[in-house]
Image 1: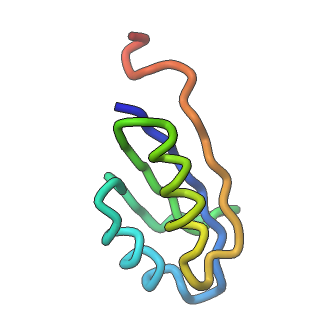
Image 2 (image 1 turned 135 degrees about the horizontal axis):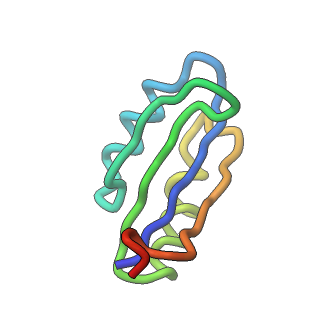
Length: 81
C-alpha cells in the first residue's frame, strides 16, 4: 500500500471545517491540525500511486478554503524495509 503525507495551508479559521471534510475521504488515515508554517497534516494511503495522485488533485486540493498543499512522498518504508 502506498502512502503520502500532505501539508496544507488554509484560510484563517477554516481548519476545523477542512479537517472534517478530509476525514470523509476513506483513504485519509490521519488528519491533524498543526501549529507553525502549515495548518493541517494529512496521511493518505491507497493501493496505487495513481489513486493517491487522483485524491490529492481532485479531492484534497479542491476543498474550499485550501490555499496550498505540499505533498511528501516517503522514500523508505517504516523500519527500513
